[in-house]
Each structure stands twice: as structure tokens, then as C-alpha cells.
Length: 161
Image (cartoon, rainbow, N blue to C red; front, side, top):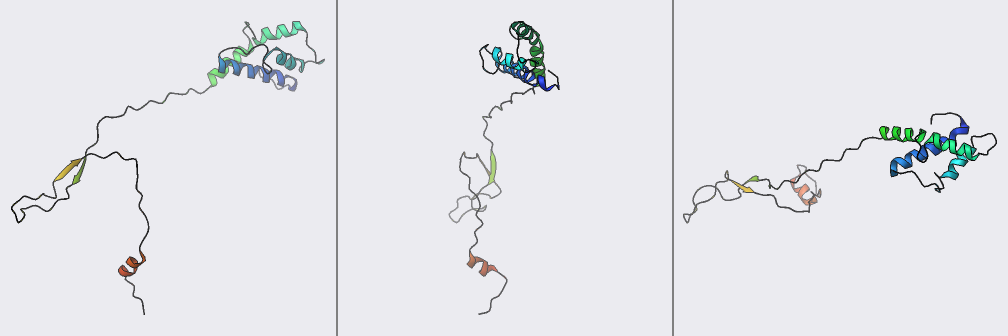
């Protein structure tokens, strides 16, 4: 309902709330609902009249015009407009987990190429070993602590005794 008349504010609020209820629940609110039932509609309509009273005929006409019950009316149009204006939410696409384990190449940590004194072969450091990452839930973080004696020993500064 598009009106700037303050007398119609209660009726407009009622119609909007009724349309939102229908949109959210898929059904009309019960007639004895304290906020959206017949008594609430009568109060909203009475606030728009000069006398503050409402006849049963006027209530029936208002229900038909608004679309309360089996009639199609203004509230149905409002509900359709609200549904059209509602943002469409797309379901997020679930990623399927991969079953392959990635292979990481790391340099070997063996002795240099050649033969040892007893005649056995040694490993070439350029040779890589295929490893798979291990699954751990712990993470380690680097610490920023520096030992004061290391700093003094490696410092280029000289201290006087």
C-alpha cells in the first residue's frame, strides 16, 4: 500500500506484515492471531475512520479488497512484489574432496656421491626422494627470541672494559 496519509499508517503496516507472514510461512495467519487476525485488522481500519468504529459490512468489504481469506487482493499483490524483490540466494557448490595425495620432491639428506672406505655406495645429493605430506593438525610458529650472548658474540661492536 503506497500512501502518505498518517491515518492509513496502521492499515499499511498491517497489510505489509500480513504479506510478509504469508511469504514466510506459505499460509495466511490464523483469524485469532493477536497481530494479524481479525481484531488487529478491525483496529487498523478503525484508526483510519473519523468515528473510530467499523461496521461488519465495512470489515467484510476490506477483507475482500485486501485479499484476506479466499479473496485475491492488495495483500496478494504485496506478497508477490516482496517475493520478486527478495534477493535470490544461490546454494554454494560443494567441492568434492580429492583422493590423490600430492607428491613432494625433497633433496636427499645422505652423504655425498662416491664410495665409502668399506666399498659401499653413497647417495648422490642431487637425487631426490619422493615423499608425501603427513597429515597433522598442529602448526608450529617461529619464535622471535634471540639469546643476548649470541648477539654480543656476533656483533661487530667492541665494548670497553
